[in-house]
Image (cartoon, rainbow, N blue to C red):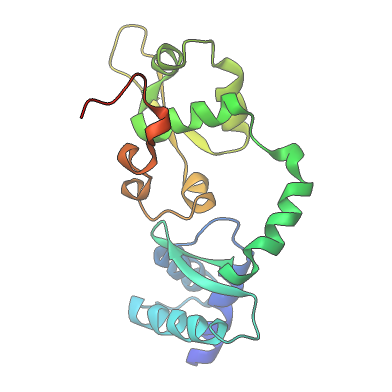
Length: 188
């Protein structure tokens, strides 16, 4: 099959995917549709062509590699415009409690609901349920402790939403702590 035809199909796959799509998923889809084996080098050549195409100023989106996959994202120059739309759709915004719960899960995963509640100091049933509904967290399995509580981790949608390739890209505490967050006086 000609490279330009493969490229168009890959572009359609990336465009239609809600989350980032991996090279393996692209290969599986193409092999199923065309009944022939596609190799990674063909896919990467097509991805390079797509990336080059969308690098032009004519397009408001670009192809980005994140979370071990590819996704179309709005270029940074348009973030403020898109942000205005998001402000108007604030009904879908996470509550402070849900954001706290999500942060705890992101930094301490895999983690049980009891551990989340011990850190927050309050019941987290509703927050955990909302995060599951929004698919920002997922159930990893069960802990090997008495009662076998459910373990929660962040989902690939979380990785896509926050444009992360891996969890090491989360801000570290030293990056976000400020002098006004300290208690007492500093000794000199």
